[in-house]
Image (cartoon, rainbow, N blue to C red; front, side, top):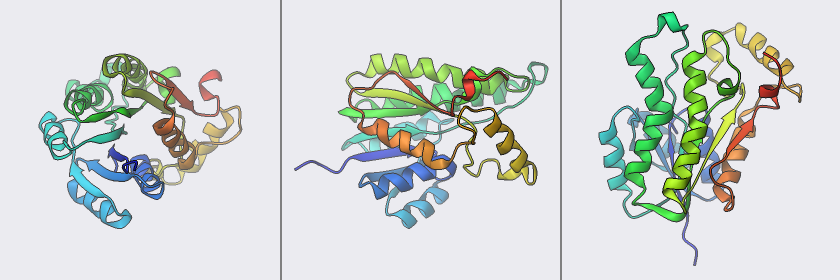
Length: 237
């Protein structure tokens, strides 16, 4: 009898990570919600029928501890972490720059370090990039470089961890709740984003979650970055 596949969703207590965790439970996975804020992870886990563990991509010791807790085996890891530092080059803060790279690139590499021994060979990792990696613009230097680096991280981790599959998803502007902080300006942002795609709309949470869930089952796909942005990276900025 086939075992229930276990998935660890890092950054799973909020936004797109929480949406992935919810769908994974619905689809029959044994879900572990990993987050820096363990209390928030436990609240969501209790709500959806999952378990929770503290995972802080900025703190390697939490990765080692989580891997030890899950040492009986895990099938998939999805990491959605980010630490935005949206400033021009002249305003860069070194600590925030390092935090951004850790969340997107260094952290997932350290996740691979600690979880490789417990990842089943038929399993996978899914990293999160973003369209800004392919659309340079003022004020998006850090976000652009870190997101672009995720593509290379996925390729090289796929080679290093094989046969475990490693892929990345690269969403465009998605109405995930992350933009609610803009208040009335959110509508204008989403409208402008829609105009910058081939399909004439901004992204929805299900666009991203559907792709992540497909990648978990796509046994012949590895080392790839899947773009979920309606063609936005092909449009002129």
